[in-house]
Amino acid sequence: MRKLRFALFGNIFQAKKSTSVQKLLCLLEERDAALLIDSDFYHYLTQHLQIAVPDWVQLIEGDDFDADFAISMGGDGTFLEAARRVGAKQIPILGVNMGRLGFLADISPDDIEEVIAQIYEGRCAIEERCVLQLSYDRGQPEGYPFALNEVAVLKRDVSSMISIRVSINGEYLTTYQADGLIVNTPTGSTGYALSVGGPVMQPGSRTLGLVPVAPHSLTARPLTLTDDAVVTLSVSARNHRFLVSLDGRSEKCAEDVQLTIRRAPYFVKVLKRPNQSFFRTLRTKLMWGADVRE
Image (cartoon, helix red, strand yellow):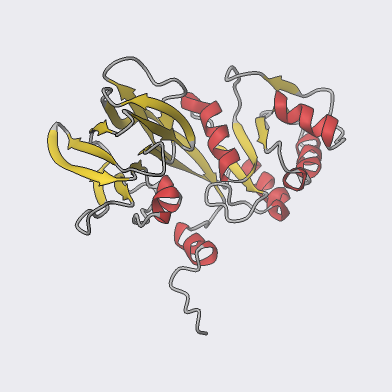
Protein backbone atom coordinates (compact mmCIF):
# COMPACT_ATOMS: atom_id res chain seq x y z
CA MET A 1 0.00 0.00 0.00
CA ARG A 2 1.28 3.46 -0.93
CA LYS A 3 2.46 5.61 1.96
CA LEU A 4 -0.04 8.43 2.46
CA ARG A 5 0.88 11.99 3.39
CA PHE A 6 -1.32 13.96 5.79
CA ALA A 7 -1.15 17.71 6.47
CA LEU A 8 -2.44 18.62 9.94
CA PHE A 9 -3.89 21.99 10.96
CA GLY A 10 -5.49 22.83 14.28
CA ASN A 11 -6.96 25.32 16.68
CA ILE A 12 -4.27 27.01 18.79
CA PHE A 13 -6.47 28.97 21.17
CA GLN A 14 -8.46 26.43 23.17
CA ALA A 15 -6.73 23.42 24.71
CA LYS A 16 -9.88 21.33 24.84
CA LYS A 17 -10.06 21.42 21.06
CA SER A 18 -6.71 19.67 20.70
CA THR A 19 -7.00 16.81 23.19
CA SER A 20 -7.67 14.22 20.46
CA VAL A 21 -4.49 15.02 18.55
CA GLN A 22 -2.44 12.43 20.44
CA LYS A 23 -4.85 9.70 19.34
CA LEU A 24 -4.59 10.84 15.72
CA LEU A 25 -0.79 10.90 15.87
CA CYS A 26 -0.73 7.32 17.16
CA LEU A 27 -3.12 6.13 14.45
CA LEU A 28 -1.05 7.67 11.67
CA GLU A 29 2.18 6.34 13.14
CA GLU A 30 0.70 2.83 13.27
CA ARG A 31 -0.05 3.09 9.54
CA ASP A 32 3.42 4.44 8.75
CA ALA A 33 1.92 7.61 7.29
CA ALA A 34 3.94 10.71 6.48
CA LEU A 35 2.78 13.65 8.58
CA LEU A 36 3.18 17.38 8.04
CA ILE A 37 2.05 19.75 10.81
CA ASP A 38 1.43 23.47 10.61
CA SER A 39 4.34 25.04 12.50
CA ASP A 40 2.15 27.21 14.77
CA PHE A 41 0.02 24.18 15.68
CA TYR A 42 3.15 22.09 16.27
CA HIS A 43 4.57 24.62 18.73
CA TYR A 44 1.20 24.86 20.46
CA LEU A 45 1.01 21.09 20.87
CA THR A 46 4.55 20.62 22.11
CA GLN A 47 4.99 23.74 24.25
CA HIS A 48 1.51 24.47 25.63
CA LEU A 49 -0.16 21.05 25.71
CA GLN A 50 3.04 19.05 26.29
CA ILE A 51 2.00 16.51 23.64
CA ALA A 52 4.76 14.23 22.42
CA VAL A 53 4.99 14.71 18.65
CA PRO A 54 7.18 12.19 16.77
CA ASP A 55 10.46 13.66 15.57
CA TRP A 56 9.85 12.35 12.05
CA VAL A 57 7.07 14.86 11.30
CA GLN A 58 7.69 17.74 8.92
CA LEU A 59 6.64 21.32 9.64
CA ILE A 60 4.53 23.42 7.29
CA GLU A 61 5.61 27.02 6.84
CA GLY A 62 3.27 29.13 4.74
CA ASP A 63 1.46 27.45 1.86
CA ASP A 64 4.37 25.54 0.32
CA PHE A 65 3.44 21.91 1.03
CA ASP A 66 1.94 18.88 -0.63
CA ALA A 67 -0.13 16.03 0.82
CA ASP A 68 -2.73 13.41 -0.06
CA PHE A 69 -5.13 14.62 2.64
CA ALA A 70 -5.43 17.57 5.00
CA ILE A 71 -6.93 17.26 8.47
CA SER A 72 -8.40 20.24 10.31
CA MET A 73 -8.88 19.83 14.07
CA GLY A 74 -11.02 22.57 15.58
CA GLY A 75 -14.21 24.26 14.45
CA ASP A 76 -15.44 25.66 11.17
CA GLY A 77 -13.08 28.64 11.54
CA THR A 78 -10.11 26.28 11.70
CA PHE A 79 -11.45 24.47 8.63
CA LEU A 80 -11.73 27.74 6.71
CA GLU A 81 -8.13 28.56 7.56
CA ALA A 82 -7.03 25.09 6.43
CA ALA A 83 -8.94 25.61 3.17
CA ARG A 84 -7.12 28.92 2.67
CA ARG A 85 -3.76 27.21 3.18
CA VAL A 86 -4.68 24.36 0.83
CA GLY A 87 -5.92 26.84 -1.79
CA ALA A 88 -5.96 25.39 -5.30
CA LYS A 89 -3.88 22.31 -4.42
CA GLN A 90 -6.97 20.06 -4.67
CA ILE A 91 -6.08 18.27 -1.42
CA PRO A 92 -9.22 16.80 0.20
CA ILE A 93 -9.81 18.24 3.70
CA LEU A 94 -11.23 16.29 6.64
CA GLY A 95 -12.78 18.43 9.36
CA VAL A 96 -12.69 17.05 12.91
CA ASN A 97 -15.07 19.04 15.10
CA MET A 98 -13.62 19.98 18.48
CA GLY A 99 -16.14 22.78 19.00
CA ARG A 100 -19.90 23.14 19.08
CA LEU A 101 -21.94 23.14 15.87
CA GLY A 102 -19.58 22.34 13.01
CA PHE A 103 -20.92 22.10 9.46
CA LEU A 104 -17.54 21.95 7.75
CA ALA A 105 -15.79 20.29 10.66
CA ASP A 106 -18.40 17.61 11.13
CA ILE A 107 -16.43 14.52 12.18
CA SER A 108 -16.63 13.66 15.88
CA PRO A 109 -13.31 13.11 17.71
CA ASP A 110 -14.74 9.76 18.84
CA ASP A 111 -14.86 8.63 15.20
CA ILE A 112 -11.26 9.45 14.28
CA GLU A 113 -10.07 5.84 14.29
CA GLU A 114 -12.94 4.68 12.10
CA VAL A 115 -12.53 7.57 9.66
CA ILE A 116 -8.79 6.96 9.24
CA ALA A 117 -9.59 3.33 8.45
CA GLN A 118 -12.18 4.42 5.88
CA ILE A 119 -9.66 6.73 4.23
CA TYR A 120 -7.20 3.85 3.81
CA GLU A 121 -9.99 1.60 2.53
CA GLY A 122 -10.97 4.21 -0.07
CA ARG A 123 -14.50 4.44 1.25
CA CYS A 124 -14.73 8.19 1.87
CA ALA A 125 -16.48 10.46 -0.62
CA ILE A 126 -15.12 13.78 -1.87
CA GLU A 127 -17.37 16.80 -2.34
CA GLU A 128 -16.29 19.75 -4.46
CA ARG A 129 -17.19 23.10 -2.92
CA CYS A 130 -17.41 26.35 -4.89
CA VAL A 131 -15.01 29.16 -3.94
CA LEU A 132 -15.52 32.91 -4.48
CA GLN A 133 -12.89 35.25 -5.90
CA LEU A 134 -12.83 38.97 -5.15
CA SER A 135 -11.19 41.60 -7.36
CA TYR A 136 -11.13 45.41 -7.47
CA ASP A 137 -11.25 47.66 -10.52
CA ARG A 138 -8.30 49.55 -9.02
CA GLY A 139 -5.62 47.74 -7.07
CA GLN A 140 -5.92 44.37 -5.35
CA PRO A 141 -7.46 43.13 -2.09
CA GLU A 142 -4.97 43.40 0.76
CA GLY A 143 -5.23 39.77 1.82
CA TYR A 144 -6.14 36.40 0.32
CA PRO A 145 -8.77 37.18 -2.38
CA PHE A 146 -10.70 33.88 -2.11
CA ALA A 147 -13.52 32.78 0.19
CA LEU A 148 -15.15 29.40 0.75
CA ASN A 149 -18.15 30.75 2.68
CA GLU A 150 -18.87 34.33 1.69
CA VAL A 151 -17.73 37.77 0.64
CA ALA A 152 -19.53 40.53 2.53
CA VAL A 153 -19.49 44.31 2.31
CA LEU A 154 -20.38 45.94 5.64
CA LYS A 155 -20.69 49.38 7.17
CA ARG A 156 -17.83 50.50 9.42
CA ASP A 157 -19.78 52.32 12.15
CA VAL A 158 -22.96 51.76 14.09
CA SER A 159 -24.80 54.92 13.08
CA SER A 160 -25.48 54.88 9.35
CA MET A 161 -26.30 52.47 6.56
CA ILE A 162 -24.38 52.12 3.32
CA SER A 163 -25.69 52.15 -0.25
CA ILE A 164 -24.72 49.12 -2.32
CA ARG A 165 -25.32 49.28 -6.06
CA VAL A 166 -25.51 45.75 -7.47
CA SER A 167 -25.12 44.56 -11.06
CA ILE A 168 -25.37 40.94 -12.19
CA ASN A 169 -23.47 40.01 -15.37
CA GLY A 170 -23.33 43.71 -16.24
CA GLU A 171 -27.07 44.32 -15.75
CA TYR A 172 -28.20 46.64 -12.97
CA LEU A 173 -30.21 44.83 -10.29
CA THR A 174 -30.90 47.30 -7.47
CA THR A 175 -29.31 49.54 -4.86
CA TYR A 176 -29.57 48.24 -1.31
CA GLN A 177 -29.77 50.63 1.63
CA ALA A 178 -28.55 48.32 4.37
CA ASP A 179 -25.92 47.51 6.94
CA GLY A 180 -24.29 45.27 4.37
CA LEU A 181 -24.63 42.64 1.67
CA ILE A 182 -23.44 39.04 1.62
CA VAL A 183 -22.53 37.03 -1.47
CA ASN A 184 -22.32 33.43 -0.31
CA THR A 185 -21.66 29.97 -1.67
CA PRO A 186 -23.81 26.93 -0.76
CA THR A 187 -21.13 26.10 1.82
CA GLY A 188 -21.60 29.53 3.39
CA SER A 189 -25.39 29.32 3.34
CA THR A 190 -25.40 27.72 6.81
CA GLY A 191 -23.15 30.43 8.25
CA TYR A 192 -23.38 34.22 8.35
CA ALA A 193 -25.91 34.32 5.50
CA LEU A 194 -28.30 32.01 7.39
CA SER A 195 -28.14 34.22 10.50
CA VAL A 196 -29.51 37.20 8.54
CA GLY A 197 -32.28 35.29 6.78
CA GLY A 198 -30.57 33.74 3.76
CA PRO A 199 -31.72 30.39 2.34
CA VAL A 200 -29.95 27.09 3.02
CA MET A 201 -28.43 25.70 -0.19
CA GLN A 202 -27.48 22.12 -0.85
CA PRO A 203 -23.73 21.66 -1.48
CA GLY A 204 -23.10 21.11 -5.17
CA SER A 205 -26.25 23.00 -6.19
CA ARG A 206 -24.21 25.39 -8.38
CA THR A 207 -25.80 28.44 -6.80
CA LEU A 208 -24.80 31.67 -5.05
CA GLY A 209 -26.74 33.69 -2.51
CA LEU A 210 -27.22 37.45 -2.43
CA VAL A 211 -28.37 38.35 1.09
CA PRO A 212 -28.83 41.91 2.42
CA VAL A 213 -27.92 42.61 6.04
CA ALA A 214 -30.61 44.63 7.88
CA PRO A 215 -32.02 46.26 4.71
CA HIS A 216 -34.04 49.46 5.06
CA SER A 217 -36.84 48.07 2.90
CA LEU A 218 -39.39 45.29 3.29
CA THR A 219 -39.02 44.47 -0.41
CA ALA A 220 -35.30 43.68 -0.15
CA ARG A 221 -35.21 39.91 0.01
CA PRO A 222 -32.44 37.30 -0.45
CA LEU A 223 -31.83 36.25 -4.04
CA THR A 224 -30.40 33.00 -5.41
CA LEU A 225 -28.13 33.16 -8.47
CA THR A 226 -26.40 30.59 -10.63
CA ASP A 227 -22.75 30.21 -9.67
CA ASP A 228 -21.52 31.48 -13.04
CA ALA A 229 -22.96 34.90 -12.23
CA VAL A 230 -20.55 37.83 -11.96
CA VAL A 231 -21.60 40.22 -9.18
CA THR A 232 -20.39 43.83 -9.32
CA LEU A 233 -20.77 46.10 -6.29
CA SER A 234 -20.32 49.85 -5.91
CA VAL A 235 -20.62 51.18 -2.35
CA SER A 236 -21.35 54.64 -0.99
CA ALA A 237 -20.85 55.40 2.70
CA ARG A 238 -21.17 58.51 4.85
CA ASN A 239 -17.56 58.18 6.00
CA HIS A 240 -16.48 57.21 2.45
CA ARG A 241 -15.09 53.85 3.57
CA PHE A 242 -16.56 50.42 4.29
CA LEU A 243 -15.44 46.92 5.26
CA VAL A 244 -14.90 43.96 2.97
CA SER A 245 -14.99 40.59 4.72
CA LEU A 246 -13.87 37.28 3.20
CA ASP A 247 -14.77 34.37 5.48
CA GLY A 248 -14.45 36.74 8.44
CA ARG A 249 -11.12 38.28 7.36
CA SER A 250 -11.86 42.00 7.10
CA GLU A 251 -10.14 44.90 5.39
CA LYS A 252 -11.07 48.54 4.82
CA CYS A 253 -12.00 49.75 1.36
CA ALA A 254 -12.59 53.18 -0.16
CA GLU A 255 -16.00 53.87 -1.65
CA ASP A 256 -14.59 54.75 -5.09
CA VAL A 257 -13.40 51.14 -5.60
CA GLN A 258 -15.69 48.81 -7.53
CA LEU A 259 -15.80 45.18 -6.37
CA THR A 260 -16.29 42.16 -8.59
CA ILE A 261 -17.17 38.75 -7.13
CA ARG A 262 -17.16 35.61 -9.24
CA ARG A 263 -16.61 31.88 -8.91
CA ALA A 264 -12.92 31.05 -8.48
CA PRO A 265 -11.18 28.83 -11.06
CA TYR A 266 -10.84 25.98 -8.54
CA PHE A 267 -12.89 24.03 -5.99
CA VAL A 268 -12.13 23.07 -2.40
CA LYS A 269 -12.44 19.32 -1.85
CA VAL A 270 -14.14 18.20 1.36
CA LEU A 271 -13.76 14.63 2.62
CA LYS A 272 -17.00 12.99 3.77
CA ARG A 273 -17.68 9.69 5.52
CA PRO A 274 -19.64 6.95 3.71
CA ASN A 275 -23.38 7.62 3.77
CA GLN A 276 -22.87 11.03 5.36
CA SER A 277 -25.86 13.18 4.38
CA PHE A 278 -26.26 16.95 4.26
CA PHE A 279 -29.93 16.57 5.15
CA ARG A 280 -29.11 14.42 8.16
CA THR A 281 -26.72 17.16 9.24
CA LEU A 282 -29.53 19.72 8.97
CA ARG A 283 -31.77 17.57 11.15
CA THR A 284 -29.15 16.85 13.81
CA LYS A 285 -27.25 20.15 13.99
CA LEU A 286 -29.99 22.68 13.16
CA MET A 287 -32.85 20.47 14.38
CA TRP A 288 -34.49 21.10 11.01
CA GLY A 289 -38.26 20.92 11.25
CA ALA A 290 -38.19 19.87 14.91
CA ASP A 291 -41.28 20.71 16.93
CA VAL A 292 -40.00 22.30 20.14
CA ARG A 293 -43.39 21.68 21.75
CA GLU A 294 -42.80 17.94 21.81
